[in-house]
Each structure stands twice: as C-alpha cells, then as structure tokens.
Amino acid sequence: MTDPKTKEAIISKAFDKWAEKKWFQAIIAILIIYLMAAPIAGPIVYNQINKENTTESVIEGIKQQKQAEAERHRIDFEKAKQAYSTAKNVLKSSLETTSSDYIFLIEYHNGVDNVVTGIQFCRFDMTLEVCREDLRYIDYSKFNDDIVARYDLLLNDDFQTANRAFYYTVEELWDVDRYLEKHILSIEGKSIVAINLTDEQGIIWGTLLFVSMDYEMCLEEVYKCRREIETIFRK
Image 1 (cartoon, one colour):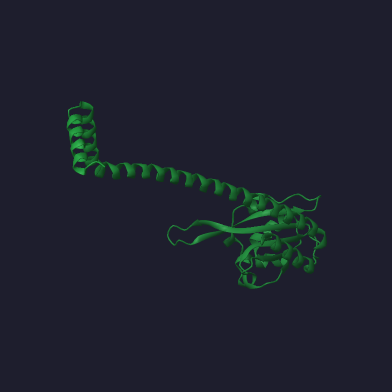
Image 2 (cartoon, rainbow, N blue to C red):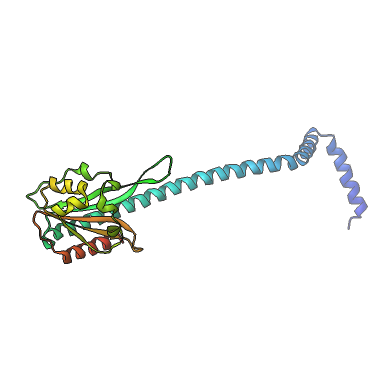
C-alpha cells in the first residue's frame, strides 16, 4: 500500500510539471475566471433565461385567451341565432292564435351616457317582427335604436311593475302614448296589446307588442306567447 506522503509527493511533482504547460495554465486561468464570474454571471444568465421563458408564457397565455374568447363568441353567436330562430317561429304561430296581424319584439339596451349626469340614455331595438303574409312590414327605422323616453307607455309606472298585459284601442292609445299611436296608425292598426318580458329575477329585458287590424285579440294566448318567449331566452 502506497504511503500517503508518497502520494502527495507524486501529485505535487506532477502539478509542478503540468504547471509549466501552457494548456494547463490556460485551464487554471479559465477555472479562476469562472469561479470569479459565476456569482455575477449566474444570476444574470438565470434571469435572462427566466425572462425569456416568462415572455413566451405570457404570449402563449394571451394567445390561448384570445382563442378561448373567439370560441365563446362563436358559441354565443350560434346560441343567439338559434334562440331568435325559435322565437320567430313562436311569434309566427302566435299571429293566428292571438288574432294579431303584427307582433313586435323590442329589447332594451344601454345608450350613451349623459356626460354631465352620467345617466344612461335608455334605448330599445325591434329585434323581431312578424306579420300576416298579405301585410307590409313596419318601417324598421321607427323602432331602431329608439329612445324609451319618447314612449309614455314604456315609462308608465303601472306598465313597468304590473305582471299583466295592457290592451288599448287605437283611440285609447291616443291618450296613453301618442308617439306609439302614430306608429300603430302607420300600419293601420286598430288595437294593441303590450306585455313585458322578464328574466329569472323579474327584471324587464323586453316587451312584446301585438297589433290587430281589428279590435279583438285573445289575451290568454298572449300570455302563452310571452311564457314561451321568456323560456327561449332564459336558456
């Protein structure tokens, strides 16, 4: 067995011999530089790598988010198309059962804020319209992005809170809502039934307007039509 002191002597002699070699000197120099630079360069390199990985993760996250939003939009769009298609078929069927000649679905939405008060301008759109085949449609611009405040009936407290249908002859409508009466006269209507649509919490989101060229309409079927439309849009 070799004496430890002999081992040290051999190693020391070999080191002295290698120390004269340039390649060995270069290795020692590189090793010294590495040991001195590692504490400084290590964190910098780590942070740079981590930064690149983080940037890639953020970009990938944004990409996935946009893809998810696009998919949700597609699903919501298809759902909306199906809902309006089904609702329109219900309204068409209700023309005969309610003894109506026109049925309008108007839906409320937010308008532009008053820049001083911050109060929104309440507006509505006619999203669905059905009528007898021998009749002409109403001018869409009459109910396009219209202002709720123009219509006394839509602002009426009883109409806003009562869970029932409101029936008026065109003569009675003159005293209730002259702006709406003008629209009904433009399609030669003689009577109208208005009934609100609500969500699960009872919040009004739209109104159904049934118009007849006569003075008779079936209110029982009006309520049935409302229930069917509410069910469609609550899904």
